[in-house]
Image: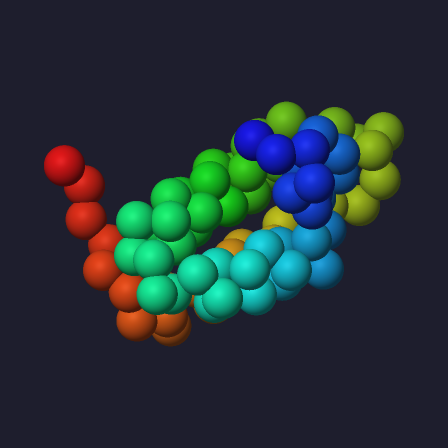
Length: 81
């Protein structure tokens, strides 16, 4: 993962997820790239939820999921070889 990807290697926020969804929306002319970015986003959201500890503060898991799923509205090919 790129160190410049919002939300990676730190607490993931809904704003981070929203920024990554926006990034995916700008990649829609590259199906493979958009699909890969979407898969990484979903994995990162799941990892953030699974690794959360109470001492990290409040985790807005529902908001994280709602933001991430907005990418499903984008029209690009999703396939696996």
